[in-house]
Length: 114
View 1 (cartoon, one colour):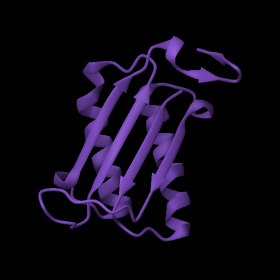
View 2 (cartoon, one colour):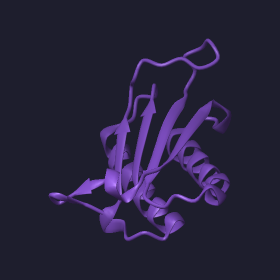
View 3 (cartoon, one colour):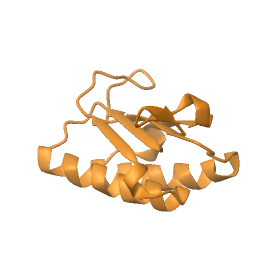
């Protein structure tokens, strides 16, 4: 049920894409205390983007999950910024993250909702 979408203007080699989404999946699962079998991660590299009037490396992340507590967002932001910095070499000051707590009835899976 957790979904992490990462959009960046950085070109990411195919081998690094797989490594990144796998690392992100395990870290998100651990941070949220959710089974990794429900975690989905999408990476959209080489997206035309600008931040603060420049196209220097940047990223926009969305993390959606059922029961995402506001009290966890600071730690999640730290973890996600560190991941993007270490794997994609993007300065955390050039990262925005949107956190979304999804109601169970608004999250579908396997022909039903949670």
